[in-house]
Image 1 (cartoon, one colour):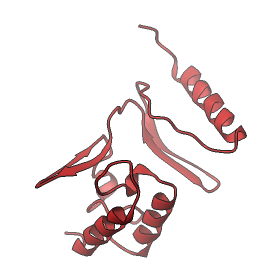
Image 2 (tube, rainbow, N blue to C red):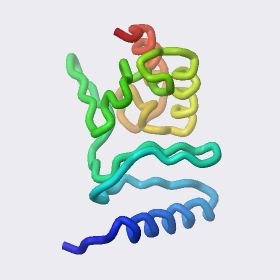
Image 3 (cartoon, rainbow, N blue to C red):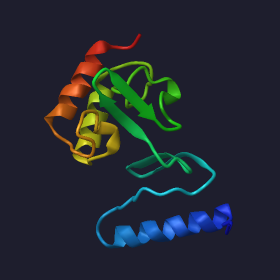
Length: 135
C-alpha cells in the first residue's frame, strides 16, 4: 500500500481544485482518501467534509429511512431540514440553505427518491421535514 502524507494529499487536492476552477466549474468527484476532515471557509464558499467516507447521504424506501455517513446528525441537527446555523432550530436560514443546495444540486438537498434527481419531490420532502419541527 502506498502512503501519502497529509501535506502531499492536501497539495494534490488543491491542484485538482485549481484545475477544475480554471476550467470554469468546480468539480468535486466522490473519492476516498484516508484521514482528516473538518470545516474550511473562504470568501463565499464553505466546505464541511470528512475524508475517508465512501458512502454518504440519505436513502428511503417504504417504511425505512437510512442516513449514512460520519456527519449524520452532526452539530446537534434536529432533522434533515436543519441545514444551517443555529443547529437545533428550524428557521428561515434552513430554507435559504436548502434552496442554495437545491440550486447547486448538492446531495444535501436530494431528500426524495429517485436519488441523484433534484425535483419537486425534494422540495416537498424538505417542507414536510421542516414542518415536523425540532423535538
